[in-house]
Length: 316
Image (cartoon, rainbow, N blue to C red):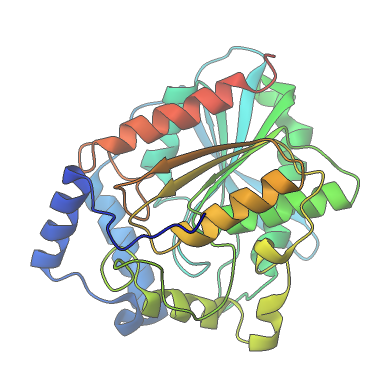
């Protein structure tokens, strides 16, 4: 079956949000440049306001060869046998941070009643591929070792990533499996980037906020400056051997430039024998999971779906 995206229309809440942003004159991340784009995202996160209170939120450091990796650990309460979620934020491998993701992580901690370990992985262009993947692997190993400190269940470790974070997460999980360390019970991937070509997006939504084709190409230029490396399966997981990966929950937006490669990745996982729960929010835009439900109401529905997938791990 050949899918066509040219008639897909945005949900009313997504359409209202995009119209509002376009009216305000959303700057192009390409024009802002690396530092400008980072500052813009951090300011937008500050303006959005804090997330809900949690029982405990503390900053820790993951020791790694030649460096340490900052993480923020969120706990809902002092219960035992909680799921532990290693969270990898989006931002095209270039922007985003633990601080900018704080409100979402707090919402996630509440919704799924889980421990969340939010990872401050190294960003490009200062630290191009594979730095982010290496940091994600170290963070997953560290979270597995330390889960009992937070009341985490030994068999309830989950990797969650959105956009570039989903790309980093699924690559890190596959590398851990290949190394004989199948620590992760489930991966949850929201609109992952799975290929690295410069082909135009399927459908009409690659020229508008929240993600344009020009921005996608710019992100790749920062993350993988060597074009020859872009066919590496650790850059483009669609090209990887996927046998042996853990059960996967995949969330896609039908009005997202990444939807076609997300669907292709779901098919590749399924044909490799991986259990896949695929959820397509046909009228949603890129980034819908982590947006505040006050801004995008269907984000709450997506968060509930993710929370259910997290809570189900280790209980069957």
